[in-house]
Each structure stands twice: as C-alpha cells, then as structure tokens.
Length: 586
Image (cartoon, rainbow, N blue to C red):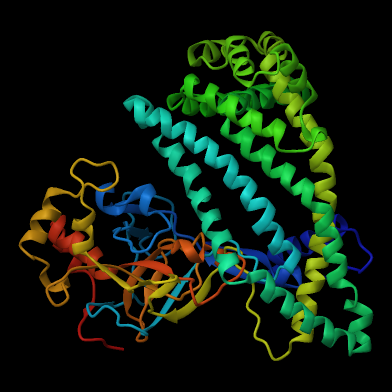
C-alpha cells in the first residue's frame, strides 16, 4: 500500500496498489516452474503474496456413474440427510525430475513428499474434523443493514424470479421428454442458487442474524464513543453505512431484477452475443469482428443445442411481466413500453409478437446469417428489432441503475474496509479470521447432528440403507445401479463396512462454502476420513453469518469412496496404492 493516501478515490487507490503488486511479483524470487500472486485480506487492509507450483498434466483416473456420484440430484441438493457418493479421482503427472511439466507421454506419476493415510475407522459423534481447501467468497463482517437487505430485499427478489422460471421449465419438462433432456442441466443450475437463497433467508431469520449484528454494533459504538481517538476516526462509521445501504436498496433490487430476468430469457442471451459482435466491429472494424466471430459462433452453437423457442417464449411472457410490474417505472426499458402499447398491453400478445417478428430463435437461420460478410452482417443485425430491444434494456440498466450502483458500491467498499479495520482495533480480545478469497484455508469443527426446527433432529451419519430406501427404479434422480443393489443385498462391503452397515455420508461443524467441494476432511490424527461436497440447507447463510448451531458441511465418507472403487468398479489395484490405517494411527 505504499503511496496510498486517505484522500484517494477508490480507483486511484486500486491503481496504486496494482502497480505495487506488479513490482512485488516481478521482484520476488521464484523458480522457473513457479508462479506467484497477491490477494487482499480483511477488505484490503492487508495483502499476502503466494508462491505456487502448478502441475498442468492432470489425468482422470475414474468417476462413479451419476446414479452414485449425483444420487438425489436436484431434490437432495443442499439437503441433509444425503446419500451421494460425490467424488472423482485424478493422477498428477510430472517431468522426470518430479517437477511441473507440460503434457508429455514421457511424463511420470508425481511423487509427493507426503500423502495422506486413509482411516478405515470413520468418525464418531464429537470427533474433531479439519477441512482444507480453496473457499471462494464469504462476507462475515457486514453491518446489519447489509444483512437485512440481503434477507429482506435481494434474496427474496431473486427467489421470486426463479420461482416463476422453474415453474415454466418444469411444466414443459414434465410434458415433453426431449425438452426434459434439453433443459435438465439449465433447470439444475437455476434451482441450485434458488434453493441456496431460500435456505439463506431461513437461516438468517432462525438465528436472528440481524439482531445479533445490532447487539454487536451497539457494543462497538459504545467502545468507540468512550475512546476519543476511535470516536474521531470511527464515530459515524455505522450511521454512514446505514445511509449508504438505504440509498443502495432500490438500485440493488433493480440490478437483481435486470440480471436475473435478462439471463433467463435466452433470446436476450442470443441478442447479447450478436450485440457484442456489433460492438467489436464498431470499435476495431474487421479485425475486431474476426476476433469476436468464432467466440459468438461457438457460444450460440452451444446455446441452440439445448434451446426450445416454445419454452423461451413462455419464459419471456412470464418474466417480462415481472420486470414491468415489480419495479419502479424508471428502471423499465422505454422501448419495451412501446412494444407493450403495440401489443395492447397483453404480455402473451407481446411474447407472440416478439418471437414471430424475429428469426434469432431459429438456429439454422442465425448460424447462416453469421456466414455473411462482416459489413453485410452488421447491417442486418442492426436492423433486427429484437437486438434494438435488447440494446434498450441494456442502456436503460446502464444509465438508470449501473452508474449509480457503481458509485454507491465504491463508497460502501471504502467504508467497509474502514469498518473491518475498526472492528480489529476495537475488539482486541476477539480473534478475526479473513473472509474467503479463493486462497488456501483451514476450517475445523466437530462431527455433530443438529436440530433445524421444532421436533426435528438429524443424526450425523447416513448409510447405504438410506440409498435403498430412496431407490426408485429408472428414476432420473433416485435410480441405483444393479451392482450396488447386489452388494447391498449380500451385505458385501469388504473391509469398508461398519458393524454390518455401509457408511455413505456424514456432517460436521466445519465452516465451508463454494470452492470447498472436493476438499479433504481429516481426523484428529491427520488421516483422510472424507471429502467435502455440500452444506445443509438450513445453514447456507454461513457465508454471511456462520452459526455452529445449524451450519453443517456434508462429506462423503472415504470408506464409501473406497467401496465404490473396489467392490463396485473392481479397481482394487488403485486401493493397493493407498495407505489404509486401522485402527486410527498418527
């Protein structure tokens, strides 16, 4: 942060820091096969330099069929009890010197200085567990108005939009097998965050997250007021943040409505790709056009492979109605209002008219159009009414929402950085850990069940018995391979079973988030006992407010992994390469 001053604009501050980072990275000592990067911690109050070795020659050894590796699919996503064997195995290859090397048939399996021993004992209630990995992003130190806005405004807005989108897609998937295949992945993607946000709101509410934040802030303000130095530096911090979040509220809501709705209507995604081609041509002529064209063709080719104009038209009808009715008029595209007037203010008529008036929902016509010479194509695209409508959506968002949102966000980020430092100054007795930023982190906890609501209590283990309880022959989510059914019937679990049962998954109080999937879970002796892959729905608010009473991470028991590899797949030769320990050993 050399050269950074208090009066700098955020853009100036970041520019200075970026230059310093570039100089530090260039000056730091490293081997030819190493790289380095710098990441901010504690909202940019501290920075750390990481030196890394990256092995790029990584080869797939094996993965279970989806009936094991994704058992339960959408229904069980974010849910405990879980019965999913979510794992895959890879082998790292290196040069003859055991150092990183580009792919070559001559590369050899990498030999680590140390590898994890694998425990065949599993875990018991209250056992220590430790997970290490690369969690993506958490926001543990937000002020109460920010948490309240997420809980009362932003998450509900996004949930409502996805409710409607999922309802439309589900209706068509149930009636048409080809649409079910086309939209299965998209449906799962939309549903994933939808379910997570619902759990987040539930968890924030049930743990009184906002109330706890306000109690914490009252103590903070009390200490600040009692110290002249702190009062001078931090006296109005919380009230300033409250004012900014109040200003942010309508813009944040409008942002979520725009991004959620426009991204769910794939005709707009098509228009966005073609609009990017227009922009590239207008900026850099033929050179820009030729650079962008293959990207556009590839993106559209992938989109059309899983696209139904019928489904998309219904999504347009339903979601555009929300876009118009559920937000302030100034955030709505003027061009859309004109289209509405010409459609007698009927959303169904608007949708019919929009899709009838364009050929962009036709893959053959659009891909044929992209083969025209640059100037001819750009002229044709500019004459497309649908593209002009998308452009008006975009311009309305950029002028009415994005510009003000960017300014407010910049001011909030600056105050949040000060608030983070203030918390560390004021609460000296408290241990602060930095929010996740995709760098290596360790999290520890204990194996424990939980009680999400009145009269409901969950145990900490699931078994193959539960897989068979959920089994539905031929079902998309709950089918079970014949070999697994046979092994279960014969109770043929080999050395991986536990008292006549086959463990599948377990939970603990480790604080994990997106990016922790695949993270190893260790016991108190450093032995591998599981692989992290999810969180329990009631505790998904852990990104914002980790609460050990209901926050649980979900792990596949390593014995189930070994059972699938050995007894199901017959790949016992892989097990021979591993160090299995029983009983537990240091």
